[in-house]
Image 1 (cartoon, helix red, strand yellow):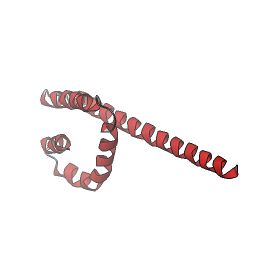
Image 2 (cartoon, helix red, strand yellow):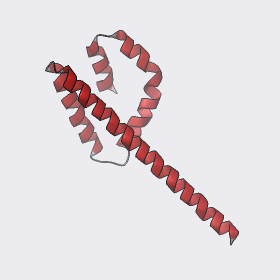
Image 3 (cartoon, helix red, strand yellow):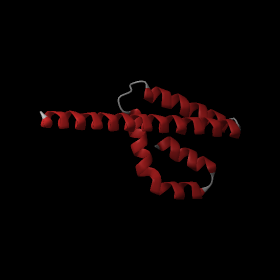
Image 4 (cartoon, helix red, strand yellow):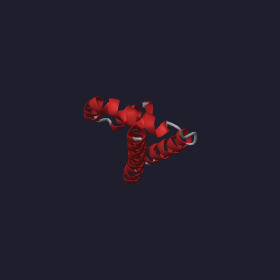
Length: 103
């Protein structure tokens, strides 16, 4: 969370912070889900953050943007995959329950 706030500060654009405030509860959920059940993920995220920050510090805006987009897209894919897996598991459980009741 602090990394993202720091990047917002670095931008010098106060509107970024103001417009993201209502989205933080949802972003926290995504972040928590991405970190859940994957021991390697904290290191992966740290590496991505370091690369983004290095691009910013080096004045490579296009690279920082591309890395940021990749970072966000990967997190979104993980969230969607896990939500789909939960839905499929729930649907399978519902089928099992119906089968047990009909016997």
